[in-house]
Image (cartoon, rainbow, N blue to C red; front, side):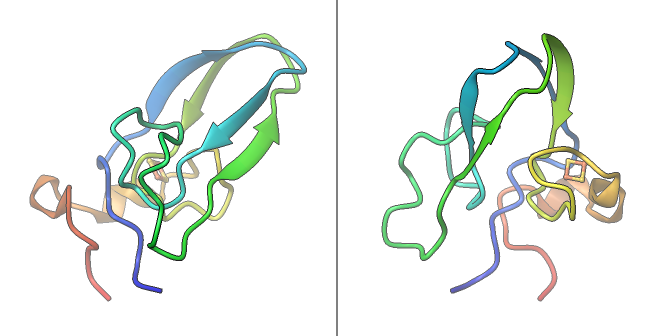
Length: 90
Ligand code: FES
């Protein structure tokens, strides 16, 4: 399995509904970021399902390197704009 694609070097602000289940894109290849669209097929990655704990906004990771998936933990600050769409450094 290779590294995930850096879909963007910033999180995406989304509106979540309490108790609703979502599928977070882990491979970085989805065209429906930050959510899964099935593009992980054949990559060895699987989407991460999660249930929103409350109604409201959340910042979900698009660099795919957070240690707190699906949420942004600030790790994206290490990626430059020109690394977007790539697997980044090793
Ligand atoms: S977008 Fe991935 S850690 Fe912020």
